Image 1 (tube, rainbow, N blue to C red):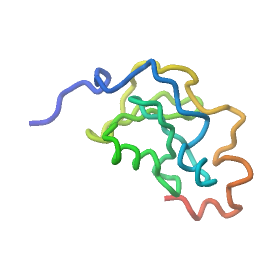
Image 2 (tube, rainbow, N blue to C red):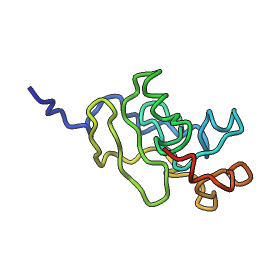
Image 3 (cartoon, helix red, strand yellow):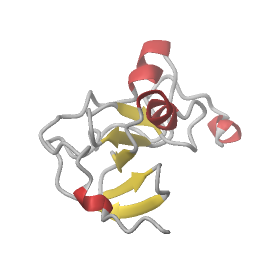
Image 4 (tube, rainbow, N blue to C red):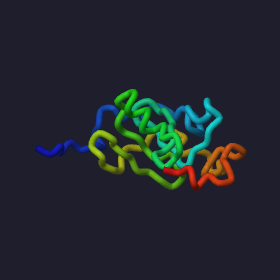
Length: 121
């Protein structure tokens, strides 16, 4: 039987938790870089998307079971549920809603190789 649960009502979504920072937690620790960013709707962890070389948002889901992520890109408000493989619009999360507008994509500035496109997944 298909799952008909409305993902917008997922109890793991905590709209009061702020994001962990302006960039991917693991890429920052490793001095790496990312293409786009995703924010965990349960704990606020910011990780890089699956197009990024390291795919830390998916790794966060696999390590924690936190299935719902939200885009952390300016102008994007969609959520993704890894467990159901469905995109949806959900509640407003705690500010900030996205990484700083002045932050380069890919980023961060100074760590992205000149041939960055060949590293995308």
